[in-house]
Length: 164
Ligand SMILES: [Zn+2]
Image (cartoon, rainbow, N blue to C red):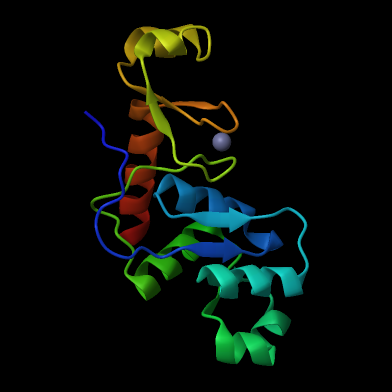
């Protein structure tokens, strides 16, 4: 069975700048609550990070130099444009959990996914997937369906590879 409760203990939460859309999706796949907006100004980004205790992820050196970011917000400057290097940097710097990956959040909208009865996935996922998979989860907010096999394995494999 899959459990979609977060393990005990404080987990990092993030907010990423506009340049980090792909990284945000990967963090969600790893189960890390990550806000990302296609269009958001710096002030708003900082405000949300402060208010919600989120780590600000940015590729913008100007943003990093702002006084409020230096003193009041935990911010991490993402050093590279390549996704693998970005993930590697974060995993190492924050010691992110890659062994016991948490239940993923919806890649599109960051909402916790819910288990759905297999029957409900019929017609919502490709028929090959429906025939071959047992467990499905869906996003209650945007309606997107996910299945265990491919998504989860893909995440684990890629993370293992990049940490080698
Ligand atoms: Zn969603």
